Amino acid sequence: MILTVTMNPSVDISYQLAEFCIDDINRCEQYSKTAGGKGLNVTRVVHQMRHPVLATGLLGGELGAYIERQLQQEKIAHRFSPIAGDTRNCIAVLHDDGKQTEILESGPVVSSVEAADFEQLYDRLLANVDVVTISGSLPKGVDDALYTRLIQQANTLGKKVVLDVSGAALTQTLQSDSKPYAIKPNRDELLAIAAYQPTGDDVSDLQAILNSELFAGIPLIVVSLGADGAFVKHGEMFYKVTIPRIKVVNPVGSGDATVAGLALALADGRDLADVLKIAMTLGMLNTMEQKTGHVDVTKFAEYVAQVQVAAL
Ligand code: ADP
Picture 1 (cartoon, helix red, strand yellow):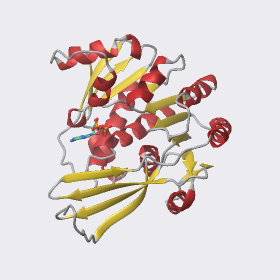
Picture 2 (cartoon, rainbow, N blue to C red; picture 1 turned 90 degrees about the vertical axis):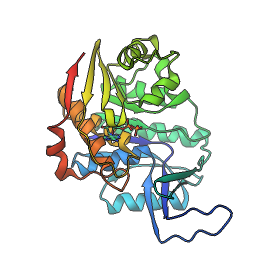
Picture 3 (cartoon, rainbow, N blue to C red; picture 1 turned 180 degrees about the vertical axis):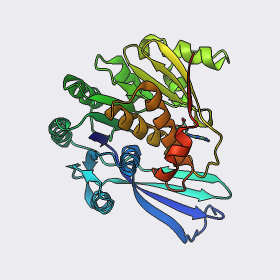
Picture 4 (tube, protein in one colour; picture 1 turned 135 degrees about the vertical axis):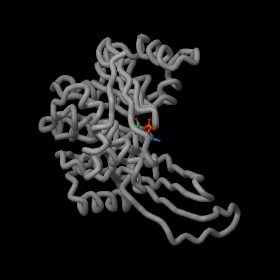
């Protein structure tokens, strides 16, 4: 069983407009509203791969209830902790031939009692899972060290954590004594937290960054590189993962699908090459679909066979 943690979920609204008119009325006929947030994208992809998954985090208000109904309809197991505030909306306007304008609400303010209730629930849920994924930002009001405590608790029980957060939250977690088993920054997220001036030689730059003190003690680091696959550090070894050229429909959420692949392959006890191949394949399959956090599992075998892992 995989436990996915989404502390700041959202109902994601996507509006498709031929032309986006500022300071005017935009009428829209093509739109969708889905349970979103990075952790829920991970959840959906794991579920589509028919691997047991349980979604947890914080939900509140009408939009929180909407997300629970959607998960129920999709037959996805979920145990969220309730909050008094309202779960947020995130809006993406897709317009003018490939442009994307986003409005992301910061979300509810969570009280210390609500955060403590969640931690108690998390401790109970941990007992029955093999792997935990932690994705996305923390809502306001929750103390910054929460992710560190979730990782520490999982480590104590011998459960692997795959962490997919960025910026200060990532730096802070990496500086603590409780290390996640795996992290999956993309190239930009990695460069943003590395105190390093790139020389332009991609391989030696990535090696130098991942060898720095900040990343010490994390068994598996997967730097996803979009169409270029991934650069990986496992223990003291480095690997380059190469993927085939594909036709991309919508790349949003491909990092989340990659995290789903890491988690389910680790939960199944697969070897490193398989873990990386499965993760890359789910990232690719997500980019081939219009809907975020969706993969066509019937294409899995065809694409996983084309992913190559080479030790450097
Ligand atoms: P994020 O969504 O976190 O920014 P990436 O863009 O690196 O992450 O994508 C994660 C994975 O999804 C990649 O490693 C790759 O497997 C797949 N992917 C993303 N974009 C493309 C693309 N343009 N072509 C092929 N695969 C892609």
